[in-house]
Image (tube, rainbow, N blue to C red; front, side, top):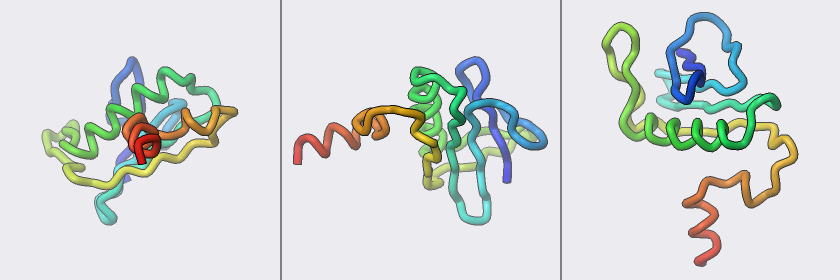
Length: 101
C-alpha cells in the first residue's frame, strides 16, 4: 500500500505509517483508495480532503518516481463520524440525489 497524508490542503506521498489526521491509502492490487479520518480532523479539512480524494480516484495521482497511479480506482471512506449529523456524513452528490428521489 502507498500512503498519502493530507497536509496543507493537499495529499503528499509519505513513507512509513501515517501520522496525519487525514490520510489516503492506495492499494494497487485491489485498485482502491481508502480515505481515513481520525477524531482530530475538523469538518472543513475532511470535506476538502474528500473532494480531493474523489478527484484523485477519477484521474490518479503522481508518485515521487514520476509514475501515475489510481486512475479509475474505487474510493471508500473510513471515518468514526465523530458526532456529525447523518446528513453531513454523505457526499454532496449523494445527499442531493437522495433528496430528489
